[in-house]
Image (cartoon, rainbow, N blue to C red; front, side):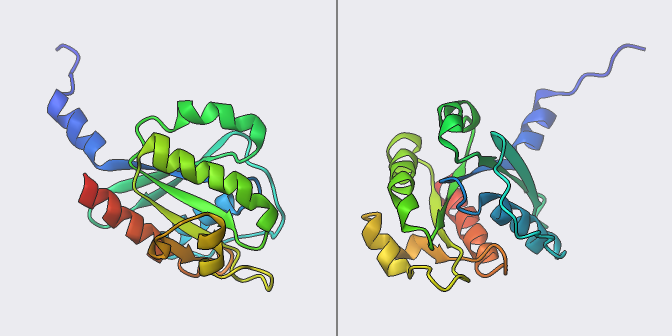
Length: 183
């Protein structure tokens, strides 16, 4: 007997069931916690968060399977400046993006604004913005964030808390809907 080969149709159908989302944002915005929270919410398990900040060394992955058989793999791109030149290698094949903002750190908004321009101007991907860390007392409301980032459509901004899980699932489902309506 010879080696069994997979047909091109089987490979294509498998690839069509996986979508790639990017988790982008400045260093310390909460991308890792957001990705972990997203996995836990979909799988209905408890988030195990130590509350300490650990920088992502380049890229991390989060798998989010849905009941319809489609699987979303979120690629968290390390927000540190030294990793940003590598982003072009990692965003190939992406179907959507999350822009994660630390809504309690106005100093990070300049970098966030640059990343927003990158998503809109160069990547041309469907996206949602997650105004993360809304559980902190000094976090800005989404209207103020929209003003700082020069965003005219505040409906794409979700006030989230990856620590508590607030609006994480809603932001994910909105991005799924946006990617499917454009695909």
